[in-house]
Length: 164
Image (cartoon, rainbow, N blue to C red; front, side, top):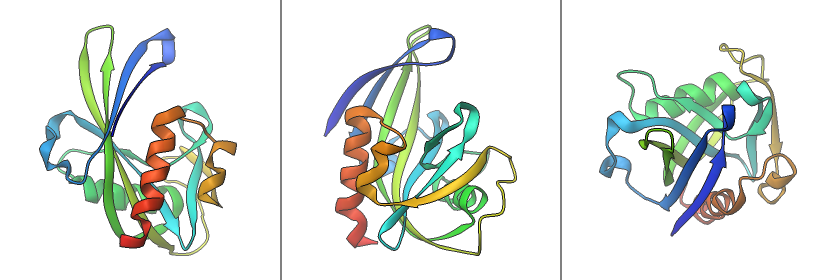
């Protein structure tokens, strides 16, 4: 399923978002993939984090570091931001982001995963996530609303959860 949307970011920059379901990220140009985020289940609830550069709630994940695979990034980010160990993950889809200033393109990857806590949340080493919560998947819009793209990501995560 393909969904298009517009997003106005910092400094009033307009971005064109194109989300598409995808089961295999190897089809994407690695060098243009910049972020990896997950709908991470802990039993039947999802883990979300508060903070970041926007001080809002959102999914757990972050920036791909040089030399990391997408999966390594996700494992590291989930541990750092929520103190959870990832047990299994599956691709959900990706978001192609076009910056209208110069038509540059990056890709943001979305996964569904399941994890278990190492222990209580202490703090994110990067200091970006200050709080985590485990919520019912159907309640995510009480914390963040990403429109039709967010709806599809959550729908697909719930559909794929049983394959984890």
